[in-house]
Length: 226
Ligand SMILES: [Zn+2]
Image (cartoon, rainbow, N blue to C red; front, side, top):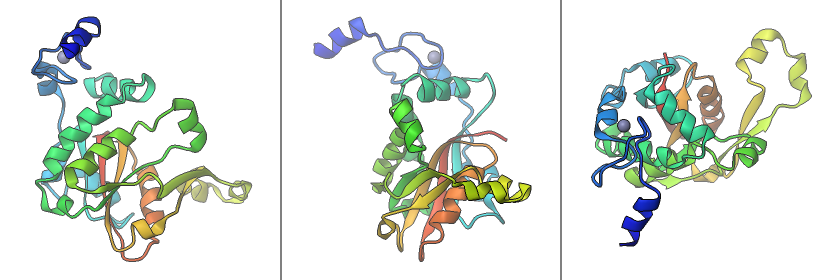
């Protein structure tokens, strides 16, 4: 009764096309769901996302749920998630990918899920990390812990200025540090981000996490742009 009243005043609409959703639909209407460009990368170890990291970072496996296209439905979704406060898009995508990953042996061993952090200033301004809900849902599906206090982002000090151009390019202005490292020692963790483009951010995260002893890392993101 209460739920019906809520629906009356705040009708649930599709994140893809803004049409009203039926009782059997959540987040997105059936036709928009069918239009989403899924990668199915996780069903193949040697996929395009994993290949980004080969030879650069030591990882177990990597995947992205969707293919990102400019002006496409995925861009629309991620824009709403990142800039319009629609955090439940992260829940939707996390539940979806989580259902698939928990059937795959290489992801079943994941024990801890770590979101790529925002810089504290940015987090304060936005009010939320757009990756958090997605990561929490993945952790739930995989029976893993969620930890947002292991990886931290900080601004580089001025010593960076004196580095040569190549070093500056490979060392992004903002760097990551590890704290509470006991949480990941001897564990398999899943590092989670929204979009993978060049992989530079994730590479920086993986390299700092890999400095921990006997630690395995896999990667999952909402979208991938080639
Ligand atoms: Zn729709």
